Image (cartoon, rainbow, N blue to C red; front, side, top):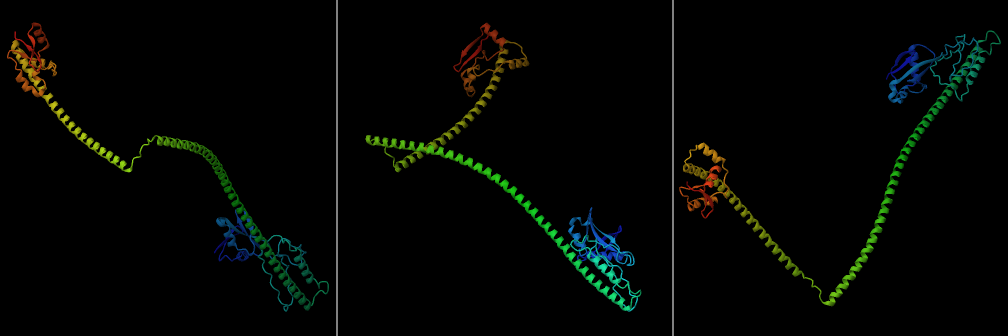
Length: 443
């Protein structure tokens, strides 16, 4: 996997990074790539916040902890100081002990002049991190060790000007032993420091987790408290409703109890009255006999027979009513036909009377005038018709029973002619036995 790191404003990519790769390995790889020695730290930057990574901390794990903000994380390589080889030589002025770094590198050791002297170990390039103050570690311990090393080197400076080969060899051996002891002590201190920082970080993480657990538990308790408070309010409301219902039930119970007492007293009074009446009837010997079940069955059968007879009678009446309605409809139809026939006969009669009147009076009237006068005359009602023309079904018999003389005009004339005839005394009534009609006498 690749890891992008910003070095002096330039983005560099470190390949082959896994979840087990530490920050120290990443720093060493970048330092070798840029070809610069010195002290470096790897800083994780998220927006405006920066955090210095520990040497044994894995960058990918730290990146995974950021979650959804992993794309905003930047890794920056910063140079915090020179390496061991870049420090001034031991011939210069003594330097103050360093207190800002956990590991303090020793000055450059002088090389032996003889080729027989064993070659000391080359100084390592320091790629450690600036981890801040030492805390409980003694800040002056390594400076004291450096001072002892300087004293060991200058032990024979006050004597002969040129130390012997054996003295130089012993000095080198002694310095090597001191160097090994100092390195071992430094490794021990680094291990202790890492353990202390890891324990501190783990304790802080544990404390944070514990506090988060407490916060979640408190939130849960608050939610439960609100829930139970709402439940308590509901229970109180239900309790008030139940109390009101109990009071109403008690009032109803008292009312029903009072009614029961009243009904009991009334029942006792009725029982006493019934007993007294039965005793009176027994004394008089006029008790009404209770009908037997056989009598009841006979009465029921009789009522059933009466009911069936009534039903049959109602059915018969309905049939009779239907037949009467049919006869009535037929009579209405025949009456309509007779009325129509009567109207036709009246029209024919008026025409005949008009022609006879014209012939009798000798007046010359056109057929159109006669038609107009005929239309102007109102139709005669059955009461105004001659007796021989009433009751349309008997018109033939009436006509035969009431023959009109040839010199008589039966019917209605125009109002002017009729009034003139009446004034002259030429119109009289005649009784044919079926009705009364008007007769015009000849002049």
